[in-house]
Structures are given as C-alpha cells and as structure tokens.
Amino acid sequence: MTGSTRSSGGLDDRRKRLLFRCWHRGTREMDLLLGRFADAEISDLTDAELAELERLIEVPDPDLYAALTGNSECRPESAGALFERIKSFRTADHDA
Image (cartoon, rainbow, N blue to C red; front, side, top):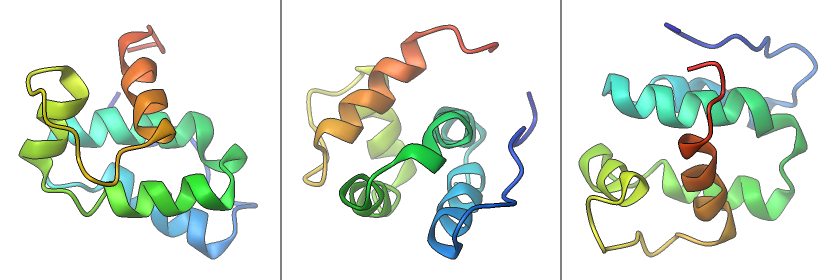
C-alpha cells in the first residue's frame, strides 16, 4: 500500500486535515501506521478521540514510532485510549 485508500469525501474539514496529516508524517513507517488507522477509523472517532489524535501527531516520528511498536517503554504524554487502539490496530492484519 502506498497511500490512502479512503476518500476524504463526506468528511468534515477537521477529519480531512487529520487524514492527510496521518498519511504525510515524514517517515514512511509512520505514514503506514497512522494512515492505515485513519483510513479505517477517522469517520467514527469522537471529538475527544480527534483531539487526542491531533496531540499524538505532534509527537516526533521517532518517539511515536518507538512507543507504538513497543521499542520504548515511554508513552507520549498525550497517549490515552486512542493510542492503545492505534497500537492494537497496527498488530492486526489489515491487508498489510
């Protein structure tokens, strides 16, 4: 997979912006981790989850990648339930 498989049509501006930012992180690994999650879940996230995602995408790629892949015991300060969902999502086979 090289990019989003989801259209941004029908999404509000906040979700469109987050979908784009999840697929354009700066490192390919993070594009795939967050982008795939966003493709699958962005339309169903609550306002609180969107706010958490907005905070998580501000975490530098190396730090967030290490936390999501279990290569670091450190969790971002903004990590909450959504962080755990992303972490679980990445371990499941989603046509990867």
